[in-house]
Amino acid sequence: MLRFLSFILGNLPKPLEKIVFELFYPIYLIKFNKEKKYIAMRLKKANLPIRPKDVYKNLFFNGLASLRFLKGKEKIGFENLPLAQNEINKGNPIIFASIHLGAFEILHRGLPVTSRINLVVSEFKNKKLDELLTSLRGRQNIKIVKDYELSKVLKNIIRNKEILAIMTDQSKHGGENFEILGAQVPLFLKLPVMANRMGASLVFFRAFRKNDSHIIRFEHVYPPQSEINKGEIAKMIESWILEYPEQWAWNYSNQAFSTFIPYRI
Image (tube, rainbow, N blue to C red; front, side, top):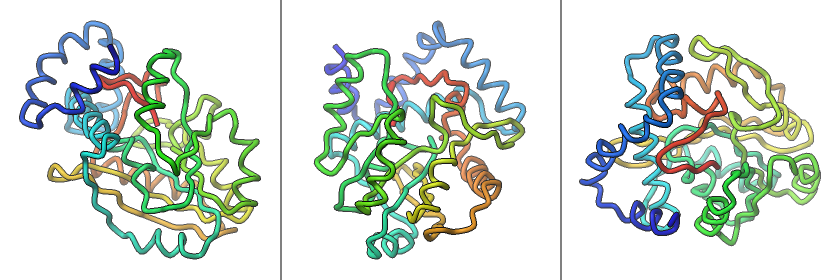
């Protein structure tokens, strides 16, 4: 059933996307109305002129784009590409870090690298959904790393000069709170900062949808063993959200992450 649904949605003509969303949105809220209220509270606190429906709509559209991308049917563009290419060409271990903005599946799987990427993901309780996503996400240069395995693999990544891809707003094991748009948001910066001290370059980047196109934009590079101010990173992330607030997963930091296309990087 899940595989059939992913096939239908992954091949949905773009003119029908808005119609399908409007049809299913009221049904979705029957189960997740509590989550909608939580998002409304956060948006009001952040003083942003968008509605929970705008957030859900963008999660839905970006989810469809993710499915198309996994099937090789969605093209992406790059901004500030030399910023990342310079680090890749040096041959250092690299940590690519981002947040749940835009089409999540395009993020680390769209990186312009040919070497293997160790990609951190979280498991779903639904085993069938987990199996479906594993098959959809299958790529030769991607090695899936569960979040509880990180401490075991980090030294190998540094030693072998590999790439580790993470989301700084994803973890089941807590994080350090930073004020972002009027709320305390947990960011998981300990591991990338530690990796930087161990000799890895730290590259921050984001993905977003602009004029119906998907862009990967490289934002900032910390060379190995940099003096890193975590507060500055939080401010940078806040600026990303302010530019495309409707495309950030506002429900995620409440650990209630669920969308029409339930997927998690």
